[in-house]
Image (cartoon, rainbow, N blue to C red; front, side):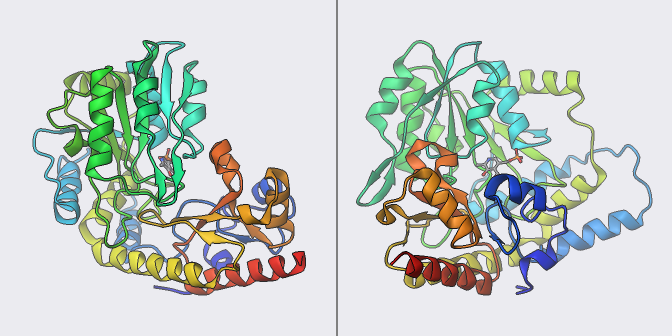
Length: 390
Ligand SMILES: Cc1ncc(COP(=O)(O)O)c(C=O)c1O
């Protein structure tokens, strides 16, 4: 995997290095090492790049029919990598995970209803709920000696409220890096079935699983519980294709298919992007060896962090995703102090933990799908910044 320096590889308009964006979030972009956006900072899968180049060469960018083989390539991939055969399940194309969440909230909850989130969790979930004039119902993860766990008693309590009608589950969990087990997911499915809470399972990080863990689809855990659910998938996070590619909604609930397709058709959400179609197919068809290398790189980089960080900074167990969650609490800084220190002193553009909810205070998220020399550089910057505190 290429070890080229990150800012040279990304285009200047890439969000991770865009000067105006860096200035807005980190005040003082120059010299910052940007590892904050959730995408791989390495050369992308050669099969995908080749497919995009070939598609560009075709010189024809009009309406294109979506091949039914697209869903087949997704299911072949899921079967091979996760032993998930998708029998009896339906798939619907959606332009993005955010679109799917927005449509599902609109279609399966009412104004003012409660939607359960498990903070610290992906920043976009909360605005998806509040901008739809629904209410966030917080079921924070518990930080135990064994790492982050779901608080199932609290979940039962929150799900039982008559106004709570949906939950957004993040599996694997961005940002804490947990890969939920069959036990965890079955418990969620049973609780949500009991209280008729619709589960939106965001599984966009499903392929980013580190050994010895394995991905359990919510679909498997939901089986026979009677819970209503939809799971969100696609190659965009795994292969760094969020700028080009569609995603999928997977479900066994006929009503989801009917209502989603009707909304999609009314708003013309299914306009095919010719590059997206090519990239989707190429990623699932040819991307396995590249992904194996990426996962090895993430593993190596996690090990570097585990042994190389200053004593005052700790890597939380990383089971999945390429987003490492660092614990800075022993530095005793409050939220503004930590954010300022990371940018101004360590010269790192990381995602401060409080972006993911108040439970993230004292933590920060770093993308480690990057050349190892960049991760070593980040570690060295942290050492120098910590030494200056003494
Ligand atoms: C859990 C999760 N869901 C969704 C997204 C974004 O997906 P999209 O850009 O398709 O809305 C991200 C991006 O990091 C994510 O981590």
